[in-house]
Image (cartoon, rainbow, N blue to C red):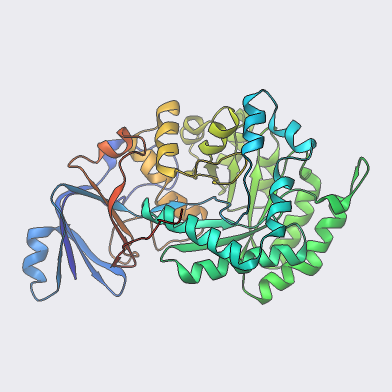
Length: 417
């Protein structure tokens, strides 16, 4: 079928994976059409020319004054949780730090208690509702982490819930096993934390079952004070890689040091990087690991943003993700966060859109999306405007009028959210 005409269409084609991008490098096709077959893009170009060449094909007309982009990709979320952390947020507003709240029994472990208590059906529905909300906002591929179970049983329950939600939503959910989120209370004896003992259980009991059930191909670990040390994380990640998993790291959020681990172990991405300095930026530029900035966590915690401009100028690949979770990043609005980070860090429009499309796809090792060109998935979103620059200018307030996933025009029910 032929879809169009769009007033403008941004293909994101022929752009680099790493380093800066200027707006004049963008390919913008005016009065454009897209030919789709079996959920993939066959051709993109002038609508008038495509109308002649594909005259016998079904025409799907669109409204006037629409600008089309590739479907957005959120490469870091924690959608599968139960409960609220509004109390934590109030404490932060009153001056308590994230680490102080966690030490006092709040933080991640508060969500762990509530998520463990939730039924599988409840977790499926919560994940599905959040995924469909993101889909209605134009996010067609969503990474979803476990990490609020912290036992073999509960981590499997969460990953199964993510898989079940994935079968029920039109969005693509990409699962990641983040059982190494923090050390659970069961492995703490007074002031002594048995991180190696817990990680050994994950390696010997959880990951084999995750692989057997095909619940995730990615393993994540949080390297930070109060979570896991660099040494323990290296041990765990190396063993996970030996078992066939791709590696992801939560790192350099409050203290630096994880970038070297990511580079040495060839992790797909290192996410956060608010504490990354010149050394970490240079280290990442020497490898293939993609830097994922999480502005939602900076906004939620009142912390500085990741040094996105410096990362790009050092020839790093930069993605931007929402980190939607109940504690540090409760907003969940990727487009708003990306626009705000762009303004704060002086990122070009092209750099921001690259970070939430094809560069985010690369962080998930997905080479079939993030661009509107021949052979890619027909994941297309369109906004009611005649100028592509309006979308970031409106900082998330402009929502897509059209969401197409795998070539299908979607009507998304989000009334339960």
